[in-house]
Image (cartoon, rainbow, N blue to C red; front, side):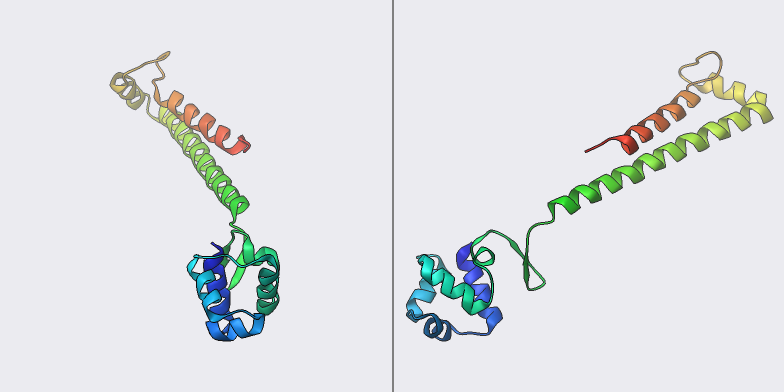
Length: 152
């Protein structure tokens, strides 16, 4: 709110309400009313405040967040980039897990056919005597690729 920004900029400038009032030509009560939100300064007083604080009128009146003593817009674009980066990492992880499981299943089939038979009998679904495990691995890889290639 404007009242909060006036207060914060006044405090940042190290001025009392009375000192600020003298600088811009109003009463201390006017500054108090502006900071409490019970009244709003006129345009020429807003200009005087922005000059007194060495900021633009936009910095004074627009809704922005205060970050380390400077006024900055909320980082909406950065949030989207972070979200996309997390999505990429999850996608890469799923692809790697699927590929490793598929490789391990292939090695298991070659090295120990009896273990493969035990796996097939333990599987709920059997597809051409290969079990559901390879299908789950491929599914994991496909989901990972979708996450990696998806555009926002």
